[in-house]
Image: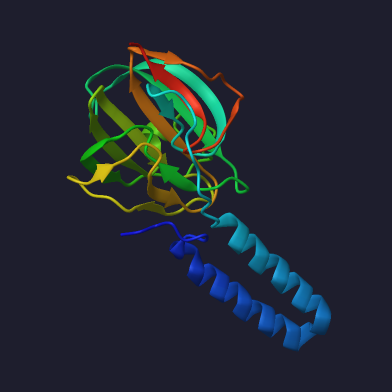
Length: 213
């Protein structure tokens, strides 16, 4: 299924609802209501924007799976899919970031697993284990990579457009998270990390790491 619309289709219902509210407010409170409704509608369009991105990094470069700010970078044992020591990069998405997720590397979707949980603020450390989340395991030519979509205090829905057996290109869209949230990527230890905590990333565009030759 093609997901290259300029506004993600999951946002159309919110935009339609905002337009309905705009009409109601206009009838109730005239132009003030119209302005309030239009602001709400514009925000919905802005939030669900789905821009084209191009990766201009090196052939061995790994691309960010999400827009947002790097919260931390840690070496951890990943025991859900990779079952080995990995380098985890956590990315926090605020409500003004693009919320479409992208594949950090080309590969075959080997594992998708949705886990129910809490809705703690996405910037807290324990969200990796306690919040509702969706795991996407990629089998690639350079080993296994795991991307995790995590809900937040406002984010209540994780959308994944792919299933096991699907092939993804580097930077290709695979899903989105509605409203503020967190995305994690677990990489093999044999990579050079190119980003640091606090850095702002663009999904599908920023080179976050590079495989060692």
